Length: 175
Length: 219
Image (cartoon, rainbow over all chains, first blue to last red; front, side, top):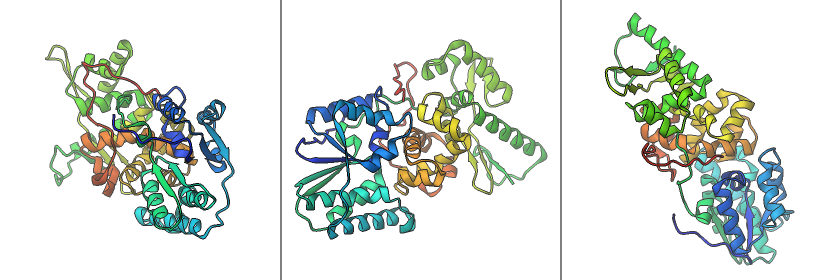
């Protein structure tokens, strides 16, 4: 198992939909390791309304409702992107994803770029550190690049599931 | 015109009537396996790990003995596998092949592996039941492009015309298929296209040792 990157209770920690998909059902080992990691840190994960909407499909919704019921996640109303830096970060994330994937910028899913702008917007609203948890390689690359490209006070970390709970392939059946 | 590729033969070998019949038979086998994930799972294991024996297959895939004997007989009847009854225990083997048509529809062991995953993965089972085997089969190429860094998971869902979370779950489930295919499927490039050489996943695609305990993720 590789080293884990710690979460911090005093740091706003945003979670993308794909993270809840990657951890699997509550009975799954990855879900339990993620829950333990979050609980140990004391952080309450911030789940944007849009993520809840995407997850509201039976039986997948159980992953989020379990987290909400147990108190280690909460739904947040995402602030509107009023800061120019936040808008710029979103635009750059979209451009980066289009570049990486070879798709037209108009075909890039808004939800994939949302976290770049949201993280920066939270910094402009007073947060000093924001963490984004996502489990999508190309989106991670784009969000990291976009938030680093704007000048704003504070730090943004973008972490994948493997970075949070440590990599392990001991619980997968290959065939 | 559909093309059956067998890389143990010469690529430019002239087509003969006997070979055409064999190719058509191979297509029918592939089509049958797409409809029968349990058989596909055993076939894929034999393809990647064979020659092997029934006991090894039962241990490696954690199968029930009685149904496995029936499934092996069915695979043999279909012509998907070969059994050498001159050995004790009998040796079972299978040759990987690829079916490709000009529109890009492709069936290789990697695609059959994706279909077979329905047997052990709830997310693949859900997509297979809701949208059919075609969606699972088509997802393989897009999943390969994701693990090559060329599509986000939401884009894969969009390409497949399914909901974002369904696409994300399917891409996650297929990660092992892509990892194993990239290492063991001689026709992986036919499925993954240009992405074949850029696959990046932390999954160790070394196939399980039948002598050791294996764990299921029971998604």
